[in-house]
Amino acid sequence: MTVIGEQSLRWFSAERVEAEPDLTALVRDYSGLLYRVALSILRNSAEAEDVVQDVFVRVLQHKGKLSGVVEVRPWLVRIAWNLSLDRRRRVRPEQMDEVFAAGLVSLDAPADEVLEEGRRMKQVLASIERLRKSEREALLLSAMEELSTAEIGAVMGRSEASVRSLLFRARTRLKERLGERLERGGGA
Image (cartoon, rainbow, N blue to C red; front, side):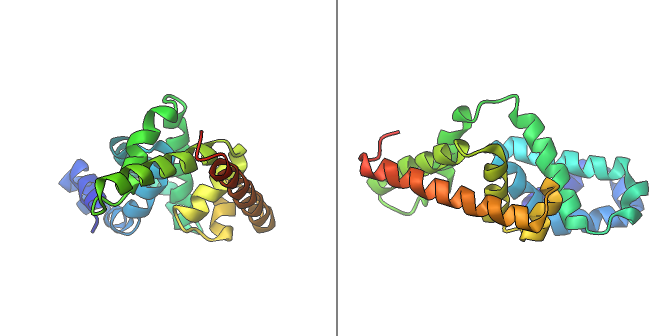
């Protein structure tokens, strides 16, 4: 079980977890994915952990509706996605990008390479932020969370064809913008 899953289980009382064996399975199976979803939006590990816990609180609050959920994975991702978007509205992305970008860079490399890679990651994140909202969301769900187009469609409330179109446009625009930055010498 992931660290996030163990933390989530500790957060819930032992009696509640024993009374809700399905919750234990959900935490074990999906907490890592939900954490990555939240982290890709929030770019802050503490906030992402809070979102994961909030997702499972929502599951407990709506446990009577669980039997009506056909596909649990997209349902949980959608909850995490929406909670993360709500939290993100309170904090500007620029405030999070530097720390988040640094966390994506390998620390095994020499310091000058780490700095350069961190700068490039910050440029990529800034370029992603400039995409249209729907394109950015589809790209993040696809690239960071490795969801299928059907699952992305379920999370975003769109058809698979629409998701494929969004992904194509997002990747094309991102490639163009990053190409422009490289041609200008890496400026922001």
